[in-house]
Image (cartoon, rainbow, N blue to C red; front, side, top):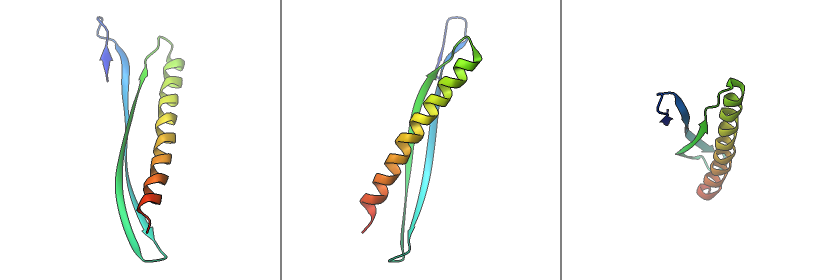
Length: 79
C-alpha cells in the first residue's frame, strides 16, 4: 500500500518484483547470478475492473523492463 486518502481508503498500491537469476554457460562450464529489483505503482479506481486493469498494466510494464534488463545483464557478463 502506497497511499491512503483522508477516509483511510487505499488510493495507490506499490508493486515490486524481485528476480534472482542463475545462468549456467554450457560452452565453457561457467556460471553467474544476479538479482534485479523492479517496482511500479498503480491507482485504485472506484470500479474494481479498472483497478485490475491498472494492476495488469503495471505488472506488464515491470515484466517488459525486467526481461530487457535480464538480457542486457546476461550479454554483459558473458565472456
